Every structure is written in structure tokens, then in C-alpha cells.
Length: 423
Image (cartoon, rainbow, N blue to C red; front, side, top):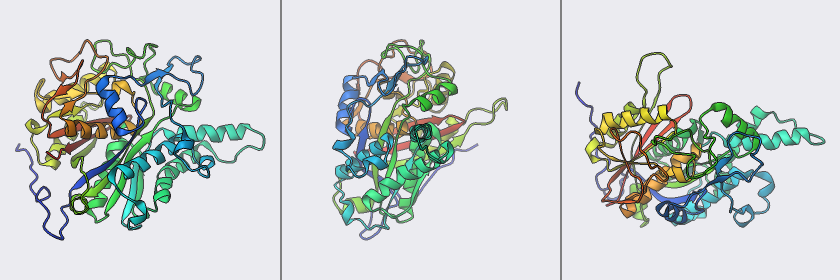
């Protein structure tokens, strides 16, 4: 069977007055457990500063897992107008702050945007738990609340994106993608589709998290959380000592613009969203292979690149032996054993639900900019050396042109997104 190819003119320079159809990233807003800006986070990643610690938001002592990638030095009153504080929860405040930072980084004044020519597409998966926790507490308090837990989830998904839209006067297309850990990539891909339809600018990505008793209980029930208490040994994807993952909160909001429009205003460009694909795993017991390999192959086809053109892979890195092996085997099947450097800097933050994949895209863009692959911290005994070339120890300096970001969501979601640098 021949390999399908993609040929079009999306990578050609734009003629005067003509759009290119290419989506480029011109702004990054990052809030992570180890850094409250894109540059602070990037510095922490290269220095190996860990953001995983014992939970302080509530007492984790009664639970088998006590560690999380918690944002501890964020003060909402320093970023959010006082009138909005009673109307928002923690994760929405983080999203608003990241959105403000992304627009500022892009040099975009929302007041100058065409209100119907700019939109917001984000992802969420766990933040509704914290919103729901607040509603449950209201139910228990005197007078109570008449909002059900299920209604609170629906409201949260709408509010999180709606607050960004309202805050910046963006009345163009908006939406929320819900595909668990894969959601951040799916949201960016949806934003790219809107740009190709003629929308000028999109805020996209995800900031997520659920560090509250109700959310913590739900994550424990889902299985897969590490029960270790040493932050440096709890989350070890692709390691012989892998025993689960550590959850966290945070993520990244990106400004996406059409390449011709960005060039016309002289915007600084981090890179291009060049390829994307999503697949779904078959039902257990079907005998069919997982869908991750197919997602990778289709994303490369969408970008018009060959496996040999990919310079680094930012892995999903589930942190459980079975899931890590499946990912390692998929990468070996596409790129050959050890055929491409692989990294998982999320070992310093934990898995941030929908926000994790968006943060990986921001990390990949910074890696392309600086020509450096950040290492997978804390992993000392790689388990799948015959399958992948895992970058550990120190950053790897190398010329980088294409980075592949992978994400898998609970229930069978697989997403692959390829970003292309500007060099």
C-alpha cells in the first residue's frame, strides 16, 4: 500500500493581499507549577526545577496519593479585577491570566480587534470538579444552592471559555473541547480550522486542574495515580520504576493568527501548527491495535513531512508500564527504534489534564526557538531503550525544525500535533 501524501501551497509565501491558510503562534501565556510565565517556566524546565510537591490546597493525609503539580505562588488579586473574583473559580482565574499574558506576548490589543473576527477555543476536562465542589459546599451551607453537580460541569465549561471571550470582546467562533488529556491539542486544531475559515485571531489551548477533595477522589477512582511520597520518584514515565502519574494544574493559552496577517503586522512568530490528527482506540478485546501510531502517521501526512523530518517528540508519558510500552512501540513503528529524540518535561509538573498537552505545545515552540530539547527529569533507568531514544539528564542541544506533540485521553483518545519552527 502506498503512503498517502499531501501537496498544497500552504507553505508558500503569501502573495500581496492573499492569505496563506497557515496558522502560526504569535503569543504564549503559561501558568505552570514551576513557572508563572512562559520564560520563567522554560528556565525552570531547563534547570530541572520540580513543581511537584505535597498538596497544600487541602489536607491529603486521608488519601493514598498526596503529591500534585500545584501552583502555589499565584495571587488572583494581582491579575483579576476585584469585581470578577466572586464570579470565577481558581481554574477560570488561571485561564484569564494566561489569556492576558498570551495577548500581551503577541502584542495584541483586544480593543483593536474586530469583535466578530476573533474567537476563543479551549479545552477542559477536570476544572469542573472544583467548580462543582464549590456548588456542593453551597448545598451543605445554610440556604444551600439548587445547582446540581452535573449542571456545575456544564456551566464551568461554558464559563471558562465565555469569560475569556467576554473579557476581551471576542465574539467570533468559540467552543470547548472535552477529550481529557488530549483536549489541549484538539482545541488548537479546532482553532486552526477557524483560521482557515477566515477568522483572524484565536485564543486557544487549555488551563486545567482539579485539586479539591471531590476532584481528587475522582482521579483516584480512575486509577493510575502514583502513591509515592518523594516528588523526585513519584512520576517516572518510561522508567523501570514507573508506578503511575502525578496530577497537576496549569497549562498554556496560545494566540493563533493567520500567517499572512501576522506578517503584515510584523508579529514575532514562535512557529506554525503544521499538522494534526486524532484517532480513537478500538474497544478492549477487539484484537485491533491502539490508534496512537495511526494518529502520528496521519499528522505527518497532514503536515507534508516524512518521519525523518521530525527532530523531537514530546511524549504523552502516561507513567504506567503498559501505557508507556504502547507509546514506545508506536514511536518505534513510525520512526524506527531510537529513531528520534523523545522527551517528557511534564515530569516536573505532573499531568495537567487538558492543560498538559497545551503546555507541551508551548514547550515545543520554545525548544524550536532555542534549539534545545529539555530532558525527562528524574528518569534514571529507561525501560524501553530498544524502542525510543529518551532524553534524560541534561538538555540536548540540536538544530530543530519540527516537533511532534502527543497526547492520549482516558477512554481511547489519541492526538498528534506537529509544530514547525521559523528557522
